[in-house]
Amino acid sequence: MATAAAPQRDEPTAMPRHVAIIMDGNGRWAARRHLPRAAGHRAGVEAVRAVSRAARSMGLEALTLYAFSSENWRRPEDEVSGLMGLLKFFIRNDLAELVRENVRLRVIGDYRRFPGDVTALVDDALARTAANTGPILAIALNYGAHAELVAAAQRLARRAAAGELSPDSIDSAAIESELETRDLPPLDLMIRTSGEQRLSNFLLWQAAYAELLFVDTLWPDFGADELDAAIRAYGQRQRRYGGL
Ligand code: FPP
Image (cartoon, rainbow, N blue to C red; front, side):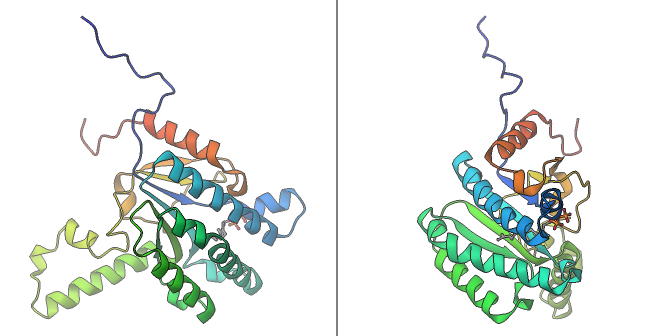
């Protein structure tokens, strides 16, 4: 009896819908070249562009990038303002392409703590891509998973205190509907570059059943080929969600 051909060993068997990346290693990339850290972040923006283009051409529904964590304020002031400058540069340079490519830009995190010019630019970019219907590019700005969960708990508690909601009716779906990722597909794959193996307060709830992939490549060296390899590695994994 004829049977369907088994997939090739290196052929992806499943495509993730939503990939998140902890973009790490810009500083080490620069140090290896005897360049200032800012040069590493600038190269990191090139990688953001390359990887978001590749994600679109591979057909991912959503890509979430950790650009600035709520802990990154601890960095020297000039590095923080350099990162804000790069965010502005990215929006000014790439917004037209995102609009043209039907990308839905999203921001997760409390970006309103950023300086007014950055906030205004982000708001404008969000408004100009709001009517788009294509793939989602979510950028985490001043994001921390604990803060996200605390805010979700506070909103639910307020509704319970107001009698709008019974505490017993609060379930996983109720919490998920309060998360900043509520409009995104479930997270399938979380990648961290540069060899570090931790989640650093990124999408902790959403990562519950995600596949985790830690790669040694420094973020500025991560491009379309590395994303493709990550997606192939994902395709080889067997997701069991606690079952057998
Ligand atoms: C980690 O490298 C990277 C960051 C803290 C920032 C990531 C930001 C960008 C790639 C640029 C801005 C993003 C957008 C979306 C325009 P690190 O500095 O911690 O590297 P190290 O661990 O080697 O020092």
